[in-house]
Length: 165
Length: 337
Image (tube, rainbow over all chains, first blue to last red; front, side):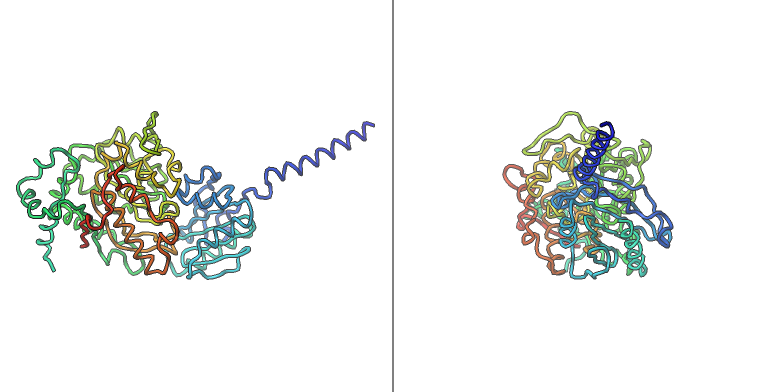
């Protein structure tokens, strides 16, 4: 009798655990997508990772927050990087409710200059930025200068981020 | 083609020592004569667009040494005074506290340039404003750092700090739909504010420049974002402390984003190499909007109207309920130098 009750309790606990995971959206939990210094050749992580919940996103991206909110952003994480001590860049990882939200943002921002890159589910690159989506994640990496080696360096950093998602 | 001297003479009609009731007495005879000579233009809002095609080098780097000269040309054209010290004395009350409201929300790539801020500070001091009576400010330290500025509260030097240090008033103030708590830097520190916004496309407002820059003086700017910031922007600018103290704009259009803003989008970065200067914030914004539209057309991007986000707040700011300035091109004296 006692053994039976214990099994029942364990079963109930397991069901609750699974259900709770679904409710809290564990699969959409913001991943630690940010490569550490030196993990990607030449790149140094130069700031702590800051995380903004959807309701606080305006503090980071001001009026841009509205379009992310409309697309179902859950949270945004961001960190600064530097390549070979010179080229500064920022990595933003937007965790959306679902892949459709990430697709919406990616497609809305594309220009005719965008070059398609093999990254995640879809990605594009420009001279100073790389943007890609993978599942519910939308990643934007932006460099603050245009240098000859920026595109290749950004792409390498983007692949490092993608591997952690 | 007018000579520089002729040009300055014909553009000397600005009513300066801005917003001061004693302005007429302080202008002096020469300025009065200039005003009389330019009676036709006097009813217009003057907006100066100062350009320097060589402001950015071939690599896209800003040549900071040229910024001071560009600023001087802009202010000379606006005031009709060749000598910067004399020009600045016509713009600011030198014995008062002058705030410089910059914009660093776009991050490092698209924030008010420190070189412009430093150039303004330099001229203010030369005109007689004490260093400690100059307050450079934004929402917070991070936004100031994005501009390339360092926080300092030392009263013997130019002060530079954010609302995160200065705090906000406990009591909200209201106009229309704007019900806001204002930054104490605006309400308690500054006697006059010069706006130093940076020109950006804005996904919500259409364009962000002179008037939208004031979202940085309230605690919860996101509450003013509804309906494409209309009438939020106009209402906020009608709140007395904003309307009365923010009396001049030196708009940074040295770099700009013409789409995808207000964040930094290098794929839409553009270098107009310009400063846009004026007292009439509506006329300044209208001018800035047209500049963005011209660039969008050149780049093959739909107009803001077609994109469904024309900056309607500019017309609202000019309407009978707000009367913040004019958006009528016929009433804007636009000077490109």
